[in-house]
Amino acid sequence: MGEARILVASLPFAGHVGALAAVSAELVKRGHDVVAYTGAKYRHRFEGAEWLPWQHAPDFDDAELGRAFPSVGDGKGLKANFANVRDVLVGTGAAQARDVLEAEFDLVVTDHLAFGAAMAAERKQLPWVTVAVTPLVASRALVKAVSAVLAGPMFNRMRAEAGLGPRSGALEAFYSPELVLAQGVSALETTKDLPEQVRFVGRLITATKKPEALPEWWPDLDGRTVVHVTQGTLETGADDLLKPAIEELAGHDVLVVCTTGGAPTDTLGTLPDNVRAAEFIPHDLLLPRTAVMITNGGWGGVLAAVEAGVPMVVVPGALDKPQVAHRVERAGAGIVRKKPKYLKKAVDQVLGEPRHRKRAEELGRQLKTAGGAARAAELVEDVLKRR
Image 1 (cartoon, one colour):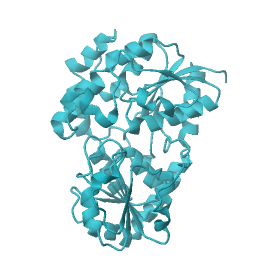
Image 2 (tube, helix red, strand yellow):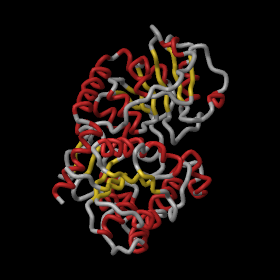
Image 3 (cartoon, one colour):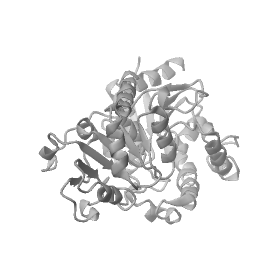
Image 4 (tube, one colour):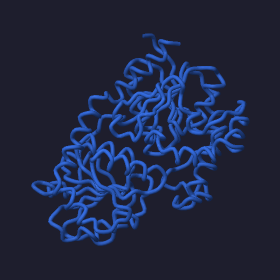
């Protein structure tokens, strides 16, 4: 098909950028003129695309969110979660729309929480596609709670500021009526009652580039049972999961590999003999050598583990992570612990029950078959053809 000008919008959070950058790369590969609307920190992730900066909307560093939005604080607890919705997601929405309206495009592909891009497409009466960067909202209780925040004056005030009329509904109002690209596969969902425009596309990720140098301790993985511990890139406080896991697994006959998500490794303190640490290691390199992953339930990391056939122990953090944990346990790909206690016992349980690895491997095959970013780009082009 002919070249189109496509705006790809992502909130400047690492867990959002990965999926949108993967779709962007495929669209660039197919000859489309792509404009990437994201924060300055992540503009380099959208190779081959023109960058549209956050200007009217306040740009921020996701590693220091509380600095740009003091109300969010450390990001923990109901008060911080509400502030995140009010001040970051909804609060910047109208300004995002102003930024996007200054660009020219034929279609928008947007992170489902980057509200401004969807509103800009609505203003211009142009097609738009949603990329769900978290699990689809399946819990009726969660939908009700989120709707109470978004569907009232706050939600419609944002729409009015963007030059649009009021609408009912909350997150569903920002799922495209034409196409929703959902990461994962249906077996990881908790309901079959999904909108007809939803298409599961597996894991949205760009090809891993081998780092210039792996950690000097990388050969220590040879012949060992590796347990990987990660808190992702948003909740990086070492006291939440990393330090408790290190303490629980010290002296165990496994090699524990911790990644800090960008925080200095010395924040972990003195490491036991069976623990290794790095700020970041590409999952596609580490997970094939991993027996069990301990995670706080970040959706991107969970999908990476599933694709690699690695079973998990999930100690859920905030926001969508309890929902992710429920999906992992329900699907049989791991177990859930509400607190980071007795992790040695939990790891031994997963290692001792092959059904968890077998199930992770089954789901991994399904993820790969779903097609990933290439399939997502095909579906985006189908929307263009219909228009």
